[in-house]
Image (cartoon, rainbow, N blue to C red; front, side):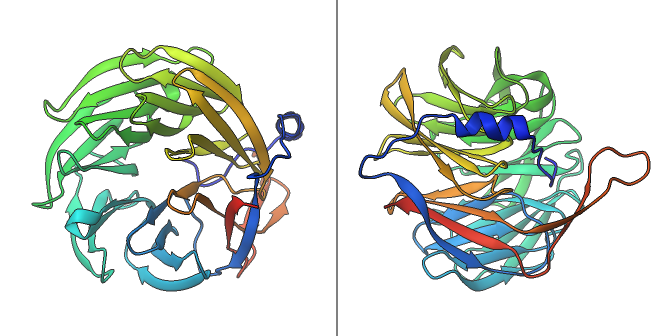
Length: 343
């Protein structure tokens, strides 16, 4: 995953045309907490038991209490960290370190690093997920197009699973299956962790560069955020697309609140799509929340029905010679946590 997002005026205008509602229970930005600190960012993970938010920050993981906006800890020495997978019943956490091809292991309660697991066949570990049914961690490797499977109890690499292309986000179903976006093939793949094999590959018609991924485990529906400002709802058993909805531009994360039956999609253009699931195959964009430019990744607190997003302010300079994109530098001290919740 690139640490920068794509922003185009056309996409922003399109997202502003998405349906809005004014009913009670609408979402808005409740708090903006300036966290500061060094490093860019990628994925976020929320630990409900401890009320702590884990934020990847390039070379370290910042740990925050989102109720107060206070930084409560830090996990160092995670070179090129992209994501954090939490195993609450084991009191463990795992980070995917893209720059040194490793997964760090830490004790969740103390935040102390206890070891590092090399992924020699897995180059550039990016998204990382934990499956509680098999107690396995999967680090999805962007450069080598495979997944490193780690025994979370024994803290050792047990397998490397080849994939059809560049993996992006992934989600376990709690039954031993894991689903993963294949970004450069516009496809979804299903992995059976009990056999250690890919058991299905489903093309995603109408989806360009699938990025975000979440799941309604009860209804067996997958929510795929696509870079052509589209969210697909896919049957997790058949691979069939059952709904297609508009979202903003620059999606990087999706999440699902099972109690409220809400799908969230966060975009780098500064929008958060809130989609209501009226049934297994019936969906409607309930609201488009204005967040902040760059707030493309998120985590959900399902107990309080809040969404956490992060962003920062940037200075832009003209593109370097031979380049087309502006050079962007994060303003010191501007890294910010947004808390979105119901009014």
